[in-house]
Image (cartoon, rainbow, N blue to C red; front, side, top):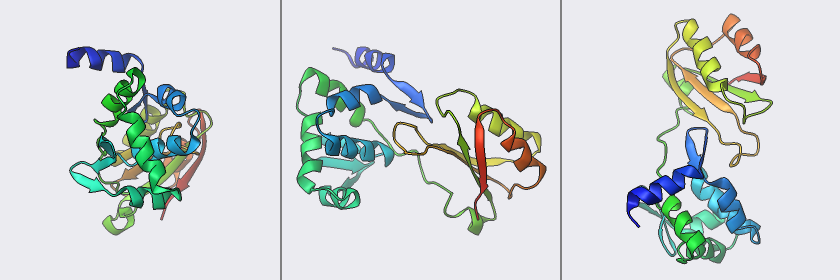
Length: 195
């Protein structure tokens, strides 16, 4: 089967959430009998790692030791290895997952921990229903309406994070009327100014 066809099949079943394409239903179904392996798959996606073969996990070209990931998740290294073996098993379901997991790349560096050092603003926005469209657009439009450049927006995926949020780093700290206007956006439950 040509790569183009695989890509078309993949994108037909992938959800675009938080800027990351995720075949979450298929991944959950594949690991339905193994919650720890599902946890490993979730961590691989969350960190932008990819699976390059049985027992091989990488972040771009850097090899990730299975034990390191296992320790971070507080599970046995063999569970991490078994997860990669399942995805690389060659079954029809696994082929599609391997096509997905072998192409994941990290989104880039997050500025959230260094925003204060750089003199940038950093807010976290929580919403009532993260699956509803338009929140990112309304937030960025509101901030842009005040003439403040946005340096970075990180939208956490509701399938990967227990309490997904929108993190926005701006050229300067936000205050007053901007924060008030952000809290008035339909669907926003709270806005936190991070320091």
